[in-house]
Amino acid sequence: MDLLNALLVIILVLNLFALGTSRILSVIRIVAAQGVLLGALPLLLYESIGLPEALAAAVGILIKGLLIPTIMTRALRDVVIKKEVQPIIGLLPSIILGALGTGFALIFANRLDMAPFQGGTLIVPAAFATIFVGFIILTTRVKALSQAVGYLVLENGIFIFGLLLVDAMPLVVEMGVLLDLFVGIFVIAIMVKHINRAFSSTDTSQLVALKE
Image (cartoon, rainbow, N blue to C red; front, side):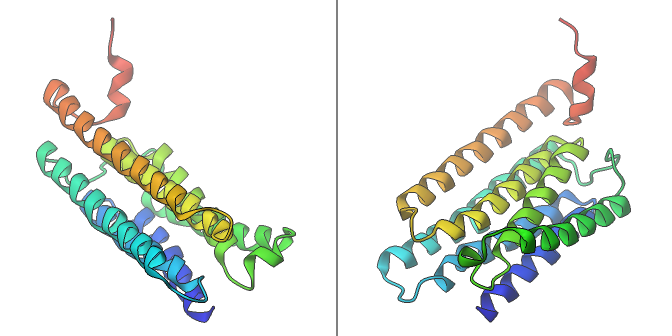
């Protein structure tokens, strides 16, 4: 479990890095690194690793760590934007808020009666903290692609929480969730491209200025 906890700590650190950078490409790469780590996590929970488990991990790494970041990077290149210039909450306050949320998640998880499921791991606090960070990015960034990254981070937190049910949840369900995520990000990337082509901007705050 030490290796599992180490990977979860790295994921928590990557959350703070995601909150602290304004370069959208850097955030995409951070989320891609998270995807690779998340894909490997289920392998650490099985006593014996068979072909289905290895295949599920490979598909998870492929989708979260390669395909989705590639789609988002291409969308970023098409809309010719580099930075989240004016987030609703600044970068430093976002980091502080994320750190406080992570600390609260650690305290809150210890108070929950989920010890048999946690098994001495940081799965529950890491899940809550990652969901919270994803929510911060989703609600405080104004660029559509940044919000898509927030959605992806939030889903990463849900994925971590799903590890608690790894024995009860069939792998096919996990693969279905990954497929839905892939399709969702693919559609978002297409929408971002068309929004930029129509309005020369992907700033979602400008949508309030649209009139019928």
